[in-house]
Amino acid sequence: PPSHDPLPRLHEVVRARAEKVVVLDDDPTGTQTVHGVPVLTEWSVDALAAELLGDAPAIFVLTNSRSLPLERARHINREIGHALTEAGRRTGRRFVVASRSDSTLRGHFPGEVEALAEGLGWQFDAWLLAPFFAEGGRLTVDDVHYVGDGPWLIPAAQTESARDAAFGYRSSNLRAWVAEKSHGSINAADVASVSLQTIRTGGASAIAEQLRTLHGGTICVLNAATTDDLAEVVAGVIEAEAMGKRFLYRTAASFVQLRAGITSRPLLTAHDLSLPSGGGLIIAGSYVPRSTAQIEQLVVVPDIVTVEVGVQALLDDQQRATEIERVTGTIDAALGEHHDVAVYTSRHLVTGDDANASLAIGRTVSDGLVAIVRGLHVQPRYLVAKGGI
Image (tube, rainbow, N blue to C red; front, side, top):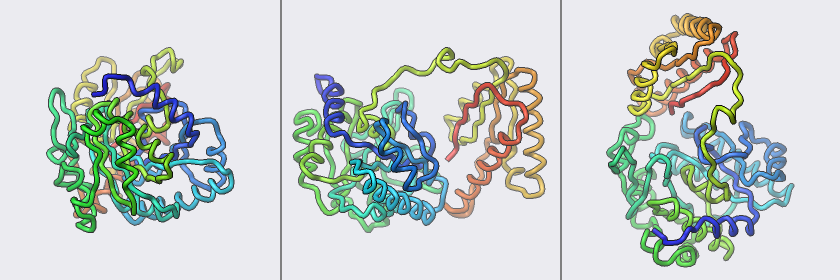
């Protein structure tokens, strides 16, 4: 890795560019590396224009498109692209755009990125692909994307995420992954990449020089094994943009934090939250093995009331209302007695016959969890939500 700390220089470069970073987030977890930024759940021109004129370095627009069928995801991204272009015209504010998605490669790629580019109406020299996410141990080395699991780094295609019913894949090499996800319309050989050798020996200037040669909407993999690697990459991206290049970013959460120049901060403490007394509520809809392991640890904590929500009941029109009423009543009773409550979906994964059917099941379960929380009469002193897309 670089022997110097690239972050101070990067923050200076970001401030000098004075560009807002607009992040289309396909899932609510994209803000986990940032703080002090607005999150929009609607994308009218007026709302976007108001935030472009605000002081925050970035704007997050929550599309939740990972839970939607491809055509709906494309429609939303195209619509936001149009609105952003008009908001930029009205305000005169310069901005760059990131499509933030999963660091384990689940999501509507390349479809929703294509639609976003169409909506913006800009001619991009390249799409930059950067799924590196330091906190989750997701690294890209020699174009191969890895997922950390304890002391091990596992090629992404060998993980549970690669077997996802909606977004599964076979390739850990990101150039091959692009070809796979494009169903062969993009050749792996046509995908560019910035290597760790270039990053660590040449730094930002060498990265910028390589990026300067890209044109015509090429896709380029950005390798990174440490946050310092990614900081050098982002500095190189900005340097290339200063030369007139235009890029669309498809990244995980680490890239957008660095591109916006947002510094890390310690985890929140109970003092920071200033919580009132009473019971709190934890809702877990995620079905992946790590979430299940966390739930197994949670349910043995003393004095926590645990409630399992039957997924099959939520999917059955005859049982759904009764199940929601049962769970809501149990939560209300426990919160009323100042107990913390952990609510989680049954652990058996239910999938559909195809990707869209599986996404529809996920939306139905998610809607059921929302109905449970909406139906509460006792307000919890905190709410922790663990997602499930």
